[in-house]
Length: 545
Image (tube, rainbow, N blue to C red; front, side, top):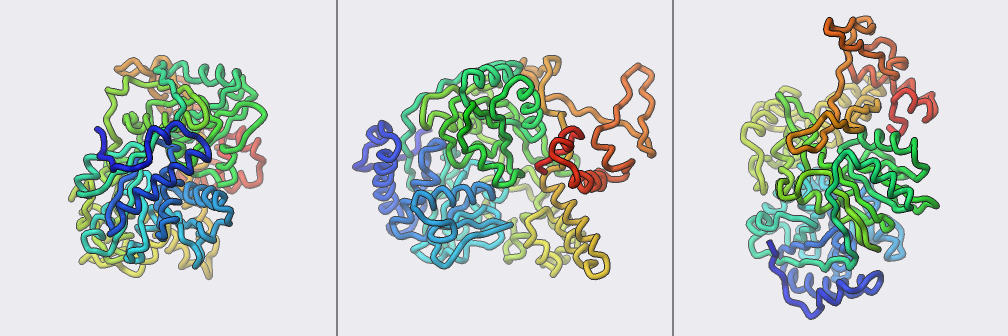
């Protein structure tokens, strides 16, 4: 499905043959020409380009050079900081001057900032009212990514364009659903960026060969990027491969501190392999990567039996293409796909707004006088999901019977956590004067939940040949449930001879706490503060978390 392209005096073929500074200069000229004509009287532009082609950097710099004040929306906090740092370095300025960042936990934006890189959630919380002048442009990056905050931001942009309160909009993606976007934004101009000149070989492999492929390539000093379904698979793979390889093995996920995330961009004397969640699908290019390893699974938010959860699900074709695009930026590469034929995969990932509890989004919108049911989503949530969200908000005391937001709701809407955690924090804050330990415990628990737990699990760390799906590919190991009695002692095994459950190593840090997993993790967390990272590892506690 080829998008419509504008004519230009700059040749796609000529830019595709260039590299480095020469490519960036030619790309700048092309982008400034096309963007100036497309946004001359306001409008919508869709910029398409493979990962590393210059969408997030060269396109936004071109907008800034055209005189626009650029408000750049990205999906993750780490990406907002990393991009602002990278673009500031290109312009020989410091972060917080001409280029800045902002998200729910920090910001570096001044009165001189003309290019701010902020998270999708920050825009949803603050709204688009400040972008109502013709010299401002809203850039929504990674528009293909399943993300309820991004999907809500796009829906708000549609409404703002109709109301005349938003003049300029640029949507950027490597693998967009172009038909859906052109239907939502009729008359939008499409600019497709030229690809990089390096070749990436696609290899379909059996999942059981993944670790041996990584070990072999590291021995040949080939640095790689392995996409994993979650933290358990990341750390399980690192533990396993570190037993036979002395190469640099690096985790990468959104809960890592920025100082740890920056390590993936550094060079090392030996080869390196980065084990990452889908955070690595987007963002700044890692120049020295020559090998890619893609698991067929990804974690998706969903609701099971009325409870929000994350489940392991097959990837979409666009996600695989996005991952493959991380290679071939500075040299040729090899991308290993450990899944079924790509034609068997769905085109795109399902919209996240259709698969999550809507309380947090609905509350953030209500805090600004907006109603979720009145927004024009590309793929709207069901009326039943909206009804359940409003009912839950009322039961929590965050809204009244007429769906007006309460003072408690206004306070919780400003806290960048789930509404249930937000209520817990605000209620705990009310006891600060006479019981400060309650708030400290609540903050610790909220942090544990937000980091997806501090206890390392190997449930998805590997695969087994006996766990084969219908397509012949191995599936993640099932999580083994532990069986304990009220005193924390192991129950006797069943009569069929099944082995008795073993006491988990981290249990030593929390006594016999069995009433609540969160209270147990709180005890583990506080006990682990006195341990070294090595001691934490031996007890299956995540030292980074």
